[in-house]
Image 1: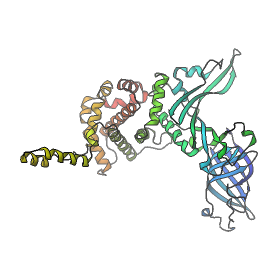
Image 2 (image 1 turned 180 degrees about the horizontal axis):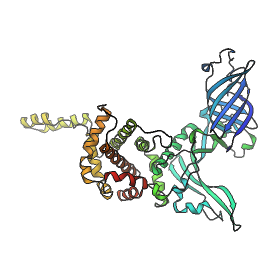
Image 3 (image 1 turned 45 degrees about the vertical axis):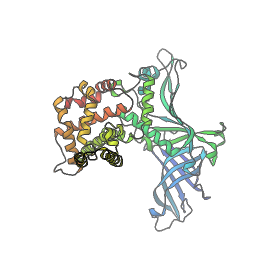
Image 4 (image 1 turned 180 degrees about the vertical axis):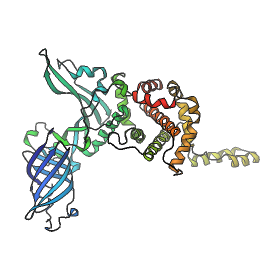
Length: 480
């Protein structure tokens, strides 16, 4: 809501406490912090502050603090920061605040039942508008575009893509033009707890991170909240009979990040409306949200790309090795999920039962003896065999990418050996050599292919997406 520094003076209290204390809420846009300053001789929960020992453990954090300034405020997730003695029996207590909801009072976090949430993500227009991106940047006529498009993701959840007027200007020839950017609205038919909807925000941000290989944060702009779940609200918020549109201030979900980034070229994304139809992109989004069972392997892959990116931290050999272990775990998880070898799904009980039926049907004692000796419950498929199977499964893609044939022959065995060596701690040095870097790169490629396949993309299209991707094209040079 505030895009510059702001201070809000008023009185503050806990939802279940009648004590109201004077204080000031500082919204610091520069440091991206929201801090509540309370000035009092007692704590906000009513407990006396000991004059000669203002200890930290005397001052708990709170889920909710209510404020009464020029408007009602609900502060969510207030973490005690510090206390200072500022005068005779007077202290200043500071709380770091994660979310501020304007115009409402809520008693408990679970009462924040949201029907809609409007968000700003980076790269959305490049991703979802494609060729229309440049057209949407400067418009002379706002009537010649479809400003809202809705996608049903689940029965209870849909996503709307919405154009918002960012600013206007008059060009050199005197024509009035409007710049637009893209917002997203999550809509929940039955309502959802505010803290739960953050899971969907997180999933969508991870879709963008996978697709762009860029760090992605988001900004929560407004939420539509059921009136029945509120303790009180400002009168000017009461136009709709059942819900209220509430502005939200937050920095924790976008710390040190510009959510207005856009203009990403086609070659920096695997899929977008630059090259795919809107229907295809919608299907990918729906698949991403529906693949709940394998979402962890999406995170395995994304973490190998994004660890410490842009944070000024040097990636150590140990961290690099751990990234490799994540990749292998992701490949194993995908193999097991897809069920490439149905033999993995046979239980020991089922095998024992069927073997006994087979023995009962045999008349020859020698055959029975042989069956008992050699017909054993199949062992779990070994990692090397799983990797062989995945390489064979994606052979056409790998061939099109011209990966070195001799390297492919040794990959499953070497990847297994490195995995065993690193996971069992049988290493004398952290740096594993150039050969290991090739194994790492191909494992990353293999998991990327698997993820694209899980999103319903056929192998010809996967091959095209990877070969045109600037980031991957540079990485693959080492294994060609």
